[in-house]
Length: 282
Image (cartoon, rainbow, N blue to C red; front, top):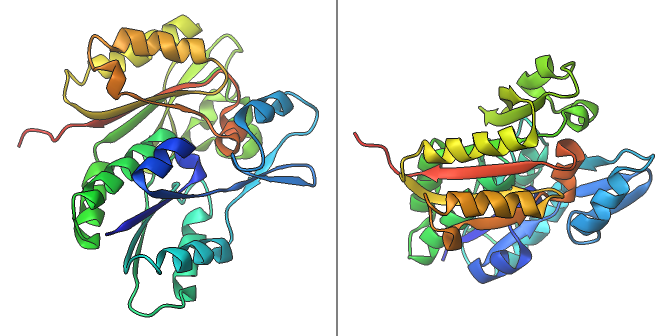
């Protein structure tokens, strides 16, 4: 069976990854000279406590050697491996994953590395569906083709309290024009061709959550999968899930928390909705 690998910015919970047989390769977050593997050596709770301190965190991708170690472990179980990683415009993780394919010891192992052009639970949804399709018996080419199809149909939308952290981390992308906005303005952000892109601005958290709800409602029930995540405000995420339950069954909504590596750029109080839309009518 095809084995699925993703990275820790997918925000898939450990329990979910284990149940689906997904291998998660962690990125690293630094506070000064102290380094921590994302969600392995530092919890989300501890990270957000430290985020408001004097030392601003930085991050780095896994080395090719780390990916190669995972490849070699999985090569003992399968000859087909699919790797789905964070957008190459946001991280060097994709290049590390590519470079590691030349370090596989076992012959005859096929490894396909896909630049998801996503992150957070947009990437998470792709990995989840890929694992489900693989579990149904699809081969590597079929699973990879399904992921490429889904890439055109997965849509993220995130409410940010501030763009300060994106700007500090150098990941502000096409949203650069919003950085100097009044503090009372809250940006709504998406990903466009793999980089951060502005959608609109709202004046309050309530207006932001309303915008996320209307975004989901706009799919008119044509939803294949959905996830909602937050950084530090679980009550906001729960409130949004309750509202959305009239559109999409809440028991089917994947819940997640923004990981330390992504939290470095998103900051606290972020709430995101990620929708994999159903196939469009032809």
